[in-house]
Length: 302
Image 1 (cartoon, rainbow, N blue to C red):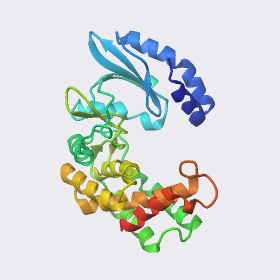
Image 2 (image 1 turned 30 degrees about the vertical axis):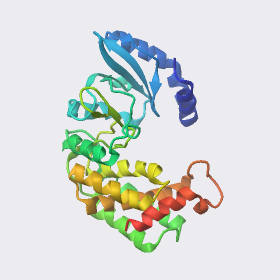
Image 3 (image 1 turned 180 degrees about the vertical axis):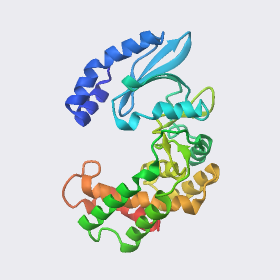
């Protein structure tokens, strides 16, 4: 019942640990289905790190989500509990020992594929999800030193890849915006594929990381994902248009969000040089169109 594409991707990414987890995954699903008095209600689906199993309990359509045991998945149920269905799917049950949850079922239609005003809806969802953060969640500001060290290493290794002014501005964002952030619960991985159409509300968020930090970070993850959609047109104009719509709907300061995005574009420009992008892993990566696109954004967002 495990989707073959998901199994192959998990083994490719996680190796022997992934293969061992896949071997016990059907048993975990059976155990939790029985524990939570559910019945199967369709074929298994999947995201990048977990399976989504449609089930019913007392006639109600739900999904059982079981994720690979990864640190990034630890606080997903904590975020759902804090939201209590406000802007996100309801959490009905959790089994932290299996990185598993029983969740409200939304529709498979994502915001990206809906035909809606994507940037406006994304901003509205960000605003809806903002709330005082509960205790115990990881703080985004604690990554400031790590990001600064990574950037220093990148600048040394890829000297001249970006103009000095662009890099200096990125360091400035770390010092001025990343090191001290408000105690607000944010999604942490908000983008157009993590917002689904639903019955209870027009849109509900899924797959949160559950972070404490600046809501501008959700704007970063959302608008970064939009580059792949807007790249076939006037990318900069499209990004500016969607940035303005998102910030207005989210009630965020546009200049503040622009600075966060510029930092992320600089970090991404160095990341693709280090690890490659798409099929490009070696050779003159600076000539790859995707890298040139990222460089253009990093330079023009100053």
